[in-house]
Amino acid sequence: MSITGNTWRNWSGSVHCTPQRLAAPTSTAEVAQVLAEAVRDGLTVRPVGSGHSFTPLCATDGVQLRLDGMSRLLGHTPDGRVRVHAGMSLRTLNRELDRLGLALPNLGDVDPQTVAGAIGTGTHGTGDRLHGIAKAVVGVQLVTASGDVVEVDEKHPWFGAVRVSLGALGIVTEVTLQCVPAFLLHAREEPMPLPEVLERLPELVGGNDHCEFYWFPHTEKALLKRNNRVPEGTEPAPIGRLRGLVDDELLSNGAFEVLNRVAHARPSLVPRINAFSGSALSAREFVAPSHEVFVSRRRVRFHESEFAMPRAALPEVIAALQRWFATSGEHVSFPIEVRFTAADDVWLSTAHERESCYVAVHTYHRQDPASYFAAAQEVFVAHDGRPHWGKRHTLDAAYLSRAYARFDDVLAIRDEADPHRLLTNDHLTQVLGD
Ligand SMILES: Cc1cc2nc3c(=O)[nH]c(=O)nc-3n(C[C@H](O)[C@H](O)[C@H](O)COP(=O)(O)OP(=O)(O)OC[C@H]3O[C@@H](n4cnc5c(N)ncnc54)[C@H](O)[C@@H]3O)c2cc1C
Image 1: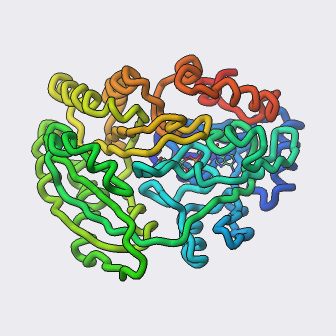
Image 2: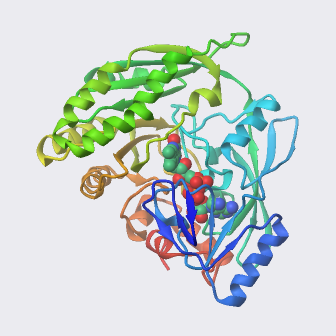
C-alpha cells in the first residue's frame, strides 16, 4: 500500500483512488465522530487496513478511515482470549502472542495485514482440521453507521456476520481472539511430481496438520509443504541461513523477480523457467515457532485470484487448468498454490459449511492477468467456487447469493447497521448489491 500525494494504491498497484479526506482516529469515540462528520458532509466512508486486498474493497472518493493509531493489545485472560485493537498488524499480534506464550491456531503466508482486514476478507492458511483466522474471533466491537458502539459476542445475533464482513457492517475497532498455547512446527518441504501429489492427496491432506502444494504451470512439477506440530519439549531446529535464503529467494523474492522479468520479456521461455524453478528447489526440513513457519516475505509484486471449492473438485480443476495452458498459448510464470481448510460456521467465509480446497492463480504485476484469471474463474465457477473476498474476481451479488446460504441474513444485518449505505463503494455494490 502506498500514498503519493492524495492517491492511495493497494499492495499490488492494481487499485487506486483519491479520497477526499483521510481519517486516523485513535479511539472508538473518535471513530464514531468520523462517521458522524461524513454523514454531515454527505460523504461515504471506507475503512482500510494494510491495503493487501487485490479487490477494490477499500477504494473511495469519500473518507478513507485508517486505524493505524489503534494497534494496541488491550487485555488477555487465562483461557487464552486476547483483546486487541482492530488496526494491529498480524506481525505485531504474533509478537504479542509469543510474549504471552500464545499463538493463533493457523495463519496465511504473510503478516502485514491488520486484524480487521484479515478477518474482514476471510484470510486463511491451510489445514485439514483448521480454519481461517476469522474462526478464532469470539468478540468484535463495531461502530455502526449511526455511531452506535455494538459489542458482538458469540451469543449476539450478528456474530455469524461480523467476522467476515468486508467492512460493510461497521468499523471494527476491537477484536477478541481465542488463541492456543504457542507451538512449534516441523516443516518439511520437498519437490513431488504433480500426479503423485494428486494421487496421494487424501493421505497428504488428512495426515498432516497443514498441507499445501505449489504447482508450476506448463510442467508436472510441484513443491509439497507439510507442517506438523511437534511433541512438547522438542527443541527448535532452524533452517541454515544460506539454505533458507536460497529457497526463499527462488520462490518468493530476488531471484524470482529476475526470473519473472525474463519471463515477461520472453514469454516463450516460461515453460523452461518453470521447469528450472521446480527442479532447483530441493527438500528441506526445520523446526520453528508456528508463525515463523507460516509466514514468509513476498517482495515480488503480483496479482492474485483465489477460489474455494469442494475438495472433490480438485483433480478436475487442475486438469481443466492444464488443458487451458496447453491450448491458450498463454505463459504463466507464477506457481499455482493449493491449500485446504475444514468447514466453518462464519456466514461469508469461503469455507462456510464446506470442507474446502483453495486454488490460487497469480501473475507477475507487470503482466495483464485478465484472460488467465477469466479462464481460471470459469473453471472455478463450474465447481461452485467461492472467490476469496480480497482477491480478484468479476462475480456479482446474484452469483454470490447462490454461493452463500446465509447471504440474505448478512444483507438484513447490513440494512440494520448501515441503512443509508454510508460504508459503501462500487465494488461493495457489485458483490453485496445496493
Ligand atoms: C502478498 C500477499 C499475501 C497474501 N496471503 C494471503 C494468504 O495467505 N491467505 C489469504 O487468505 N489471503 C492472503 N492475502 C490477502 C489478504 O490477507 C487479505 O486481502 C486481507 O484482507 C488484507 O488485510 P489488510 O489489512 O491489508 O486489509 P485491506 O485490504 O486494507 O482491507 C480488507 C477489507 O477489510 C476492511 N477493513 C479494514 N479495516 C477495517 C476495520 N477497521 N473495520 C471494518 N473493516 C475493515 C476493508 O474495508 C476491506 O473490506 C494476501 C495478500 C497479499 C498482498
